Image (cartoon, rainbow, N blue to C red; front, side, top):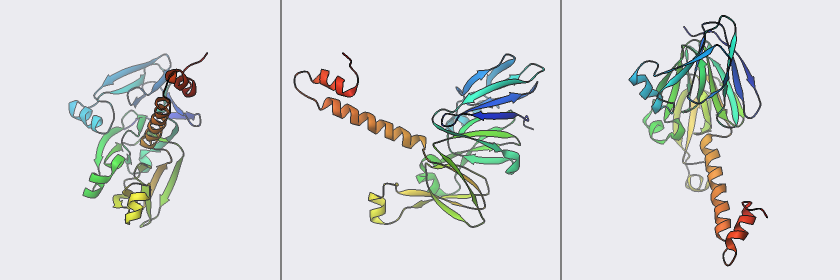
Length: 256
């Protein structure tokens, strides 16, 4: 039985979730997510279930250890957790979804004490080989609140039975266990080579809830990497005498 917790989400593009704990209640979180904790909150780091569970969390992109924050005081105390990059925090009440929910690797932020994080491999061979971010999923199991983080703008799709949606594999954030998930080839020579959307897309079929993100972490990292390479190329392309100085000036690295 998971602890019953209250929460508030603050901010817009760089959100935090502030958890209110009654005496004796706890919340667990991924390593490094804590923003602040009030006096009376105590941290306890462990593998939560032993070596095997710790290794399973590592496979899903989480830390080998997990930290639980307990309120050891009689009154209400607060602890807050910050999103790791620009985006939104999605609260999921697992008791409303049959006790489990699936999310992308690294999607988990924090949850009420009593929620477990498990590996959820995709059901089909094609999805396993070509799913990209969707190859290994996280299954959040329990009957309380869990919080997922995703990048950019988040939209929720409520799929009817048999209703399907084609999604970029990196933009699929989370979905209820009743949703069928598979990977499909884009199709068409020109689509595959010049479409710019990759060779494969995720196909999700209802019934159930699907959360989508506009800015996957992998896409953000690629854009930042490309911008960094472009800037380095511009600077290194200025040759001749004084090239280093001019490069620094144009690159914004030197001031006089």
